[in-house]
Length: 400
Image (cartoon, rainbow, N blue to C red; front, side, top):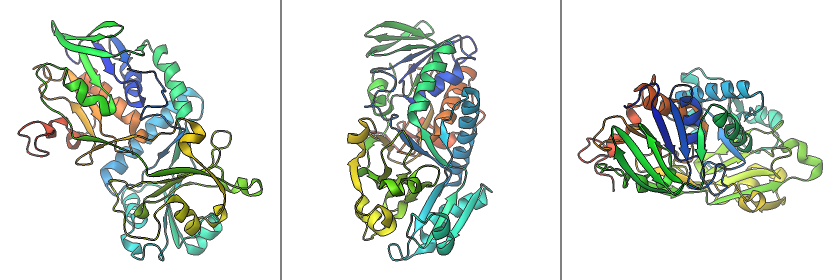
């Protein structure tokens, strides 16, 4: 039995993608089991942090559309939960001509054009308007993605830990995968806690995906994944008299991706300061500039935080590790695994979230649930096909 109502579904990987898959699959499948090698919400996992950006401003219209779709699913989940998961403070992309002179070529201007094309809510803030609206920044312009902000990751994790089991899903933590074998018309997953019988498998195991694929009989595909993380990530702690200027009620999520900078406001009661990260995102070309650190950015573009006390994000929270799994062609990997046991559409995978994936989690979960239980999805995911890395594939070649 593959991909039919009443089937037994096993999800390997209990991060946000796996739990979202379980959430959407539970009402459709006969049974759902989530296996995690550590524990849900483990601070060492890629999907855990304190805050993660939720935005629509991409250079690629397809990712912008999908981000907006994911946002609607977040809002539905938030409404059903009756508690705040998203903090809607907007996302502001900055430009300063003395830093990056080619303003029309900037990420801010180009991503804003995509928002305009898709008719998503946005605001352009030239210098004087920016200074009046967000005096925290010293820049020549800001382009605001209005329906954006950040996710409260701790709240999301706590909610999923509660609602997923309430939907009848079994979560097995500290379950090391020892073997995956064919069992009749389905699969048997041997774990350190005993065997699990399944009709359909979904793998959401991040950088551990290839290790699992090696255990599947007949599966020769491997994905070109590599780990990544920000070069720097620090909290800047404003003076008490200026603190209100930097909380989520006054400051948006912000980015200057042309120079590798992103940031989150001080989340009152949750984080100690304004988070500023320095990262070379794979989907944005970092141009030469005088900014080579978070301190450089603050000195240049957030003068009110010059000289502020700082603390490394990981030291402050002990959890905000921001590990990313990157793919060589910089697209998600989402869909059926080719050659898995010789049985079509009985193993599915979601991986390669490239540092931007958290915001897409409910959409990814819904897609994987539809694929696993309903044998198809309402979304066009051809671009993300895992088969592009199979031997002899037209695109992607052989993955090593």
